[in-house]
Every structure is written in structure tokens, then in C-alpha cells.
Length: 401
Image (cartoon, rainbow, N blue to C red; front, side, top):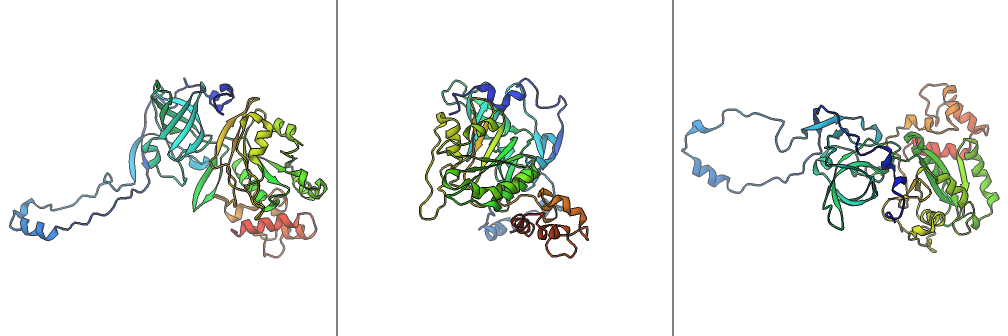
């Protein structure tokens, strides 16, 4: 899948490998590391040791104890690199690497401790992650994510299966992430647009899930596009009220059918020369749409369960797929729920395009738009200027549901 495409379509061509990733003057900084997990050793010979040492010279005992920050349990170490703002979903430290021995590439997929990296010349490497990089303190589940631009040290160049070691992750942009078990799950990085894939039926349409993804896209600065698949299973007229609500806010809505081919050409034009990620619940047809766009991909697909009307997890990992006509897409596993990451209740309304114009007209400056009197947002909803379902979606997110 990865070897047949044009190497120039990958994003690694944006920055040549000859550009050094570090400044000439190396800087030492104190970096925060993860807490080390060490088992407590229980000594069973304390009495015997005390009896054997009794009577020895007492002047050999330590009179004082010095607490150092260089012990085995310290969470700070001195590394060579530079500090960065981790607001982009990356690490707080950029480690220095040697550009003479390291190469620049892009992560195509992540398989546990192993990462598939595509170099600038199109060569595929299976890379592990440097232990120092994995030990840095971060709120992420994984240090390396699909779409990352990385510097890696190649090894086994003469072998048929080329390997390497990732030593640095470049600063990110366009990060799509969610909350998973209290930590940040970075789904994909360095993308321009998010295609929110939903289905008109089988499984049923979930507008609240679309709203959550729209808020995430607004916060991350990613252009959202709503794509409703399987329109051949319903009357398109029934979708017009929902399309009208999103269309009035300026969101682009595509109606497609991977089965009949309706709207596939338009979707292909949207993806051309763009860096896109497809996300949505299981069974909506993300892989089927990609197969319709490029039949040579031959991504595995499965039907929706007839009993639960829910999708079956077919795509198990996110993978970056270069397109022959330019750009690339990231096919992601289906999701059942999408919890927002790093969005406090006070700023949720600011990510709702239809609520934003009324925020400044509320009676109280810290209005939550839920229970206060004199709330312009509630008045606009009562007057029909804001869709009632969209307001309910806001209330759920603002209350942390």
C-alpha cells in the first residue's frame, strides 16, 4: 500500500533532509521525566547484619546525609535540546539529534512499540522509539503518533527489512486528540482538515457526536467537513433540516454513497492535495469510501451487525495513506464515544459558531447559558435563532457529560 505511491506526495518533502534540526550551539536544559516504577526491595538479613557489624568502629558511620537530585528516583535530568510549548500536543523538550547520521521521515502507522516510518525517498523503515524520548514527562498515551514528522537513526540498511530508531519528534500542528482514561490520546497530527464521517442509516446518525468533533476541530484549528455516507438508504429530503443547520454556520456538508458512487467525485476533489483525517463511529463506511475513491487500496471492510445495528471494528489502527493524485488521508478506527480534551466548560460556547454571536449580550459576563436569568443564548434558542438540538448538545458538553 505504501510502496506504490509517489514519494513526492508525502509531507516529508516540505523540509529537506539537509536542513539541520538543531542550532549550532547545543544547550543543556533540565527536563521533566516520568516517575520511575521501582519495586521496593525487602531486606531479610537486617538482624544478622546488625549482629555481624556490632563492635565495629563507629567512626566509619556517616554523620550526615546529602539529598541529591541525581538519584535513581529523580524525575529531572539534564539533556541536550531546547524547550518548547507543548500546546501543540507534542513534548515539552526537543532533543538534539545529529543530522549527519539521522534522517527525516513521517510516521505512517503505530503498532505498539513499533512505528512504520516513510523516509523522504520513499523507503519504509520499522522504527522503535528511543528510551530517552519515551521517558519524557507527557500527558499523552503514546509519544509518537500517526502523521508525526520525526528524525530517526537508520540501522540494518543492507537488510531487506530496514529498521531504525526514532530520536526526535518535530513540533506538531493540526492535532486531532481526545481524552482516553484521563490521558491525551493523540489520534493523528499534522493534518489540514477533518472529515467527520457519519451515516444516514445503519448505524443511525449521531448529531451530538458530530458536534463534539466540530468543537475539537475548532480548538485544534483543523478545517471540519461533515460527510454523510449511505444516503442511498434514506430519502435525502429527511436530511435537509440537519444539513441546513450546519450549512447556515458555514460548515461544508457532503452527501455520499460508497455503494452507488454518489458524491464520490466531489469527495475526491475535497481530498486532492490536502492532508486529511477520516473519523467517525464504527460502521459508517470510512474504509469503504476510501476504496471507492481509490479501488487499488483494497482496505478491509465489514458489514454492520444486524442485531445491534452497530459497526464492527475492522480498522484496528490509524494509518496514513498517500494518494496517487496528491495529498494523503488517515483512516482511523471507529469510535463509540469522543470525550473532549483540554476544553474547560467556560470556553465550550466559544467553539459553537451559532452560540458565539450571543455570548456578549448576556446579563452576566460569566454566564454559563444554562440556568441564569437574562441569558441571550437561551433567549435566542427560545426565539428559534439557535437550533434546540444544538443548544442541548452544548449543555451536555458544558456540564461534562
